[in-house]
Length: 295
Image (cartoon, rainbow, N blue to C red; front, side):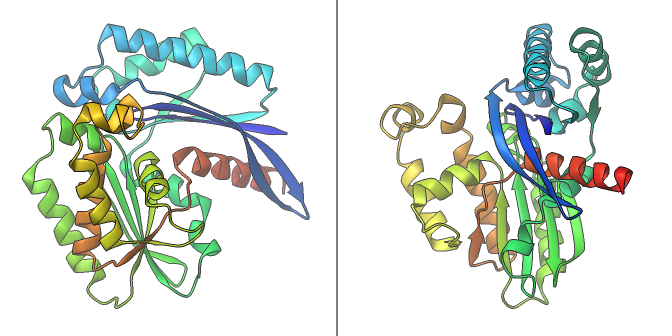
């Protein structure tokens, strides 16, 4: 049995096809195919609040290709979610209809809180140490989702209009940074040893560059040193010398700035990077939905 997850983000669009393994009333999944297309919808959405005809056409073509792949892989269930860029684009609802008409994919535009719920549906904290306190930090192109967990229970969660594409396009606002700082000050002051859990393409890349041992956290000091190291290269050299992809080489700097700010304001010394993201969470929501339906 195979499920598919589609994540239409502000920087890239992703398709994950996963093999579902069921045993004793529970299910797990193994990643089969992951495809990423760097469409950068955020550039249009955050600057003009409108996704251009060119990008809209590229998005529809991408969805048609994803649908064909899902058919070839004989996917039995899927969920397609669009986040920050589509939330802000005035023609977001029109694009949802275009995708349905041309690719026969039902797309939902999800709010920040739903996005946060999907991300932590992958239950990452259960694989680390449930007795500890964690702050989930998911940094995307258009928004940052923060969710605070204590002893396995979520005690606070909020989505902020701060993301890598938004910062590159100078569309981030001082009051949003202040709002995030205040949220962290208010909700983390009672925790002495709060750890971070970082999700998203940028933190995964940073973790690889840090060359940490598998499952070991990355320290605030290491992330800060990495930020200064990357910042010492021009954009061109980050691509040619360090070998970063074109669509990663620019966003990785503002991503560092967000993670470092959150860790500093939350008093977080270490961050775990489990290499999961929105698409993993979507697959998990499909598993839970189908277990509930068949149970």
